[in-house]
Length: 415
Figure: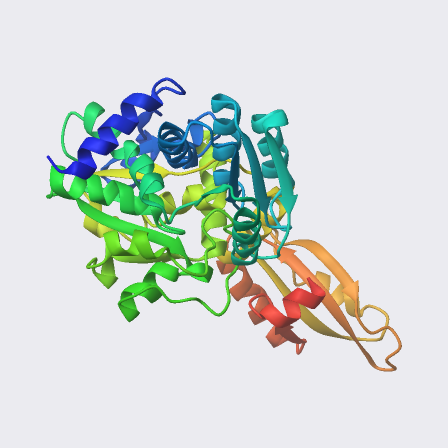
C-alpha cells in the first residue's frame, strides 16, 4: 500500500464527520443504450453539489492541524471550489476570502455566500479564471494568508482521491473503465494516483472541454502549457493551463486516452440527463457521460464508472443550453434569405415549409432595398433531415440563402 493511498484513506475517514459518501448508482438508461454496465458516481449530490468539497476540506484540515492559529484562507474559483472552501470555512470556524471571475454564474455566487455566511468575503474580479487566480494570489501574499489552490496542491489532490476510496469500498467488482472530467486536473490526479497502485487493471479515460483542452496540450508538449484562448462555457473545467503538480501525477497517459467534448454536444447530454433521468448536471458535470457515444464500441459488455462531477447549474442558462443543443443536433438552423420585395414573396417561402418546420426567428435585416431584402430566419424542426428537403425545395424555387448556423462571427452579431 502506497503512502499516498494511506493518506487518502485517512482523509476519507476524517471527511465522514462532514458529509456521507456520495452515491454510486447504476444507470439503467445508459446501460441499455450502450449495452454496458454504466455506473454514475454522483458528486453532484455532495453538500455543495460537486466533488470540490473533498479537496478543500482535506487541505484546510491539514493546514489547521499544523497551524491551529491560522485565521485567513484565500481561494480563487469559478464556483465549485469556492463553495467547498466556503462550506469548510464555516465548518472549521475560520475566515476566508474567495475570489471569483466576474463571469461566474450568479447561482454559484449566491450558493457560495449561503455556505460560507459570515465566515467568508467574496470578491468578483477578472473575466477568466487565470486572471482571478493572479488577483487572489497577490492578495494572499499581501495579507499573509494561506492560499487554497483549486487543484494544484498535494493536499487538494489527496482530498479528491477520497472519491476513489469510496469507489473501492462499495464496488462489488473492479470496473473496466473510469471516465474522469478534467479541468485543472486535481480530481483525475487524485483518483489515478490512488487506483493506479491499488487496482492497476482499470483503464482511465479523461474528458476535457474542446474549448479548454489544457491536458491534451500538456500531453502533446510533455509539460503544462498555457492555452492562448479558452471557451468559458464549461465554467467548472475551463482552465487555460493544467496544474504542474496534477500533470506530474498524470504524466505518461496516452494521448488517445484524452477526449475532447464539444461544448454544444455537452448541452445535448445535459438536456438528456435532465429530461430522461431527472438529473441536473452543470456542463463540467456532464462531460463523463457526454463521451459515452465516442466510446460505444470500446465499452460494450464492460463495466464503466462515469464521475458526474457537479450539478451547480443556473437554470437561467437553460435557454442557451437548449439553443446550443438544437444547433448541434441539427434540428435548428439560422440562415439569411434574400427575399424579393414583391407581394406574395413571403407566402411563396412559407409554402415551402414542411409540417415539422417552425419559424423561431424572423427579422428583416435590410428594409430599404428596392428589389430584394435580407431576412434573418431561424427554423426549428423535428428531424435534422428535414432541412435537406427544405433547402432542396428552396433551391428548386430559386431562393438565394446562406446558412449561418455554424458561422461563429455572424452568429455572434446576428443570433
